[in-house]
Length: 104
Image 1 (spheres, helix red, strand yellow):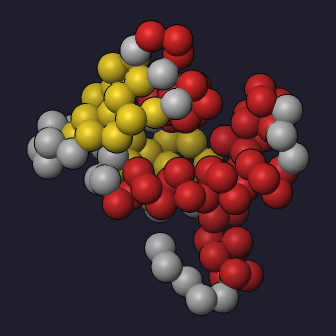
Image 2 (image 1 turned 90 degrees about the vertical axis):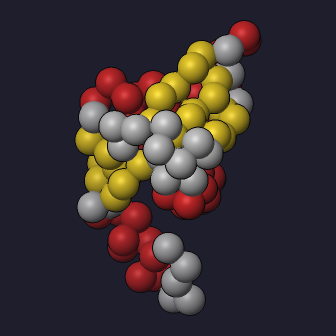
C-alpha cells in the first residue's frame, strides 16, 4: 500500500474494509498477547496486547471498516485519532504483507 501522496493514502484508509482471511488463525497467549498464523503460507505474526484486542474485533465482525477500528482504539486505549490512524495504518499494512487480511 505504498503511496507517495499522504492525502490519497488517508482517503484510501478511510474507505477501507478489513476482512480476515479464512486461512488466518489467532492463538491467544498469556497477558492478552497472541499470535496470528496463516495456514496457507505458514507466516506468523506476534501481537502485543493492543494488537490482539484489535484483532479480536476483526475476527468477531468478519468485515470491519477501518474507521470503526480507529473509534474502538481511541475508546479502549485512550489515544488520539491521529495516533490511532497512524498506528492502525501501519498494523494493517503489516497484516496485508503477511497475508493475514484482505482489504476492499
